[in-house]
Amino acid sequence: MGKLIIDAHSHLWLKQDTWVDGKRIVSLKNGRSIFMDEEVQMIPPFMIDGVNSAEVFLSNMNYAQVGAAVVVQEVIDGNQNVYLTEVQRKYPDRFFCMGMANTVEEAKAVQAAGLQGIAFPGHRLHGSLLDLMPVFKFMEENGMVLSMCLGESERQIGEMAEVIEECPQLKVAIGHFGMVTTPSFESQVLLARHGDKVMIESGGITWLFHKEFYPYPSAVRSIRRAADLVGMNRLMWGSDYPRTITAITYRMSYDFIEKTPELTEEEKAMFLGQNAVSFYGFNNLPDLPYIKNMSE
Image (cartoon, rainbow, N blue to C red):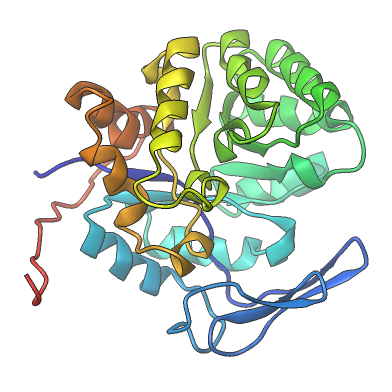
């Protein structure tokens, strides 16, 4: 089997059609969407129907030799529980799909549907994370994984620390690499010191360093810094597919890590796949040999 690469942060949807804070989000044609009342290129223009499907993602994954992916959710895409339940059923060895839930009853429905985790875009929540403690307790008791993206608020980061300490057996993945380009970066990364089941994943890191662009030397330095703080064994690669591949290819979202001399080969292997396999429990991963481009 070739190299082991796991994407710990991606998104899928059939259609965006929702409202957030009174602003519209809806899929258009040719990869565009109305996002917060503004027309943007949400996904690559070849996704002409606005559908961000598992099948198109699998084609990208196979080309880039990515064995499996964790699919999280964001309120800006609308609730995709029904679609992700179907994806999990059809491709159990390639995807680890997360549901959305705000109550224990909703969490029970997510679990009953066969989804193995719940994603919270905490940076978009208006209340306290502690209000969700019954949901987190249910997840801990039932072996579910929590994906949490946080904002810059030190209060919210403190609340997350309390959740981790109150739920010591709950697996937690902190997303967006702790909002690495903001002052909250180190505080978020240090959450991994509050429990031995807490990981930091890099979904969106190429978006956060978009102005610097490929090969993202500052992103590499931030990975080095996070490893110095909590250990490389607590870090995982994530792409934030598909929004990030409007600017770069899917393979580019990780090959800048493969090519950097700032990390050892062992560290690269841990970050790009080994840690995620252990954390999420992936099995039966495919052998994905390199297929050269026609232009090579």
